[in-house]
Image (cartoon, rainbow over all chains, first blue to last red; front, side, top):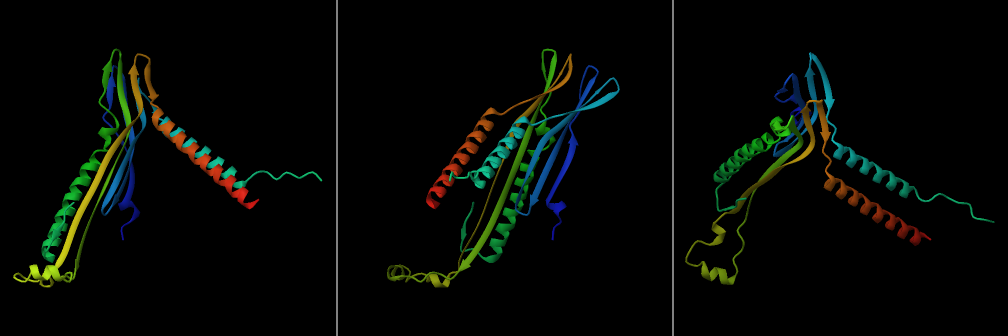
Length: 95
Length: 157
């Protein structure tokens, strides 16, 4: 039986650094690989850029705003669905 | 996709092995499409800025193969007249095999890295079309759920 690490794994990698004047930018990305006996898929997304300037390095994250908004919409839809399934609040009828 | 008829078991196995090898090569090519070079584009100079595009890249694929054998169909009256001169269908093994596969890759811009006189900035790229479609789908699903709930309550009352 194949272990999970042989079927799916993730790795982070750096692309070739780009130097402009005295600034060096190194892009970083994350890759998820799922490999099945008769197929598979690869998903790669950028995670950050590492900026080196004057001997100092700082990491600027790359945020996928489209994905964040999509997940937010999904969360809102699930919350509304949950609220609808719970039904209306019980109100006491007048005597 | 391929289909063979009246092939021997050896021929079929060879065919399926060949299909597997071809599919593995195809998968390697699909996986290569989502490598690091595809995520970050080549730096582009625009005025005093150097721009690097960052994209999300997804690729995938799969394949399948199968074979089968069975007894020859019984000839009807019309067929038996036609096959009187030649070998009867019952004498011939009936079988077939086939294989097929597919795959694809897609990319979506996520951000633009700008290296300029004011330093390095990351500007996000928002896919308005995708978000609009997601919002419409979520709204339609919510509307459908609400209507179903109303109908269910009316049925109970």
